Length: 456
Image 1 (spheres, one colour):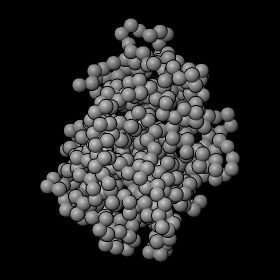
Image 2: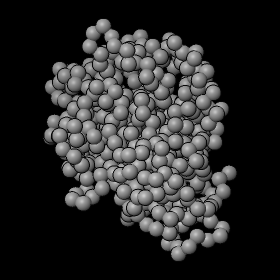
Image 3: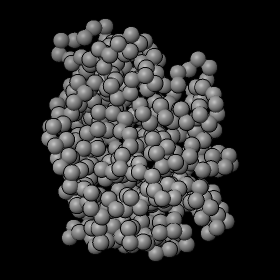
Image 4: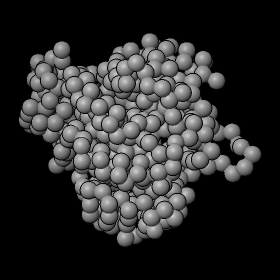
């Protein structure tokens, strides 16, 4: 059981800004109960060994894909694209057992913690065996994800994914997609089963529709009318230019336009990628209240394109970050690439800021904290009374951090140091990473290596 504690912080990032000499009181359930200012560390309190910031939620993960990171970088006979990468991913799916999935997910979740994340939103569509036959327990792979989160100590928002079609207009699924496929009735039964499982381990439950091309309008409507999770709803949308072209050919509308016209999109929703939008779609998505789920490292790796983040944020849009296919696993790498993508497109510096004199690092970090919390099913992010005690301690012995003041702490972390600046990580009041190492690191690494050696 988690023991209540009080953590004394010389420097801590609160929703109101940086504060000095603050205590964070945490109850036995892992929630923050008080944040009083103090003049000195009290004898019975712990001391954070460096500046403290919130551990943000990673809003988009396909955990099993961590096993193929670095293995799809061989040039093919023709032009390589997202669609050729997808075929390599299908081949990996054909080799993974439930045991393998649990091992890979546990390793990934450990790495995400070490990268500064405190929660993962698992967009989980690998439901069945390689031949598409459901396991004896239809919830088998979801249960493995839950076990991996427990083993690593990361917070979990679990999103089983509805996937039934291979293209717009209700095209039948292809062979490589058989492990993903459900009908509406079986999928709703899975959600009902997982309500109990998630409640038992304090995980959030929502659901996802894989994409507009993976479900018919009638199937999407039936799900939205019948589901009772009350959790977040996520969907891939407008990731690829070909997807936009196919949607136009099918409906006469672009994907984000169709989604906003036909689905009840609001603050409960997260639009994953949303890379290819017109200015009008960008403003509409921002005004809908939906979170834009951005995965800059994966989007760069797959050649997706660059999300219009400056325009979206300028219209009041809320965004967060995820690591998707997990070619990267750190907060710093995703946020740095998000900002750099805007700079490369615009050929200007300091694009995502709150105005003259504001810190880019703080602007994008706080935006990702807020957007990640909402996409994970929480009202707000940050270190505040009533929130989970999900905290990251920066490494004060690192010269860049030791010499930094105020806003420089985040700018140094995100644009100069990356993962090296993460020292300790607390999730729900419990330390799971200390001095850069996970409590079960050797055991998890050894099991992961065995899986990689067996996979072709």
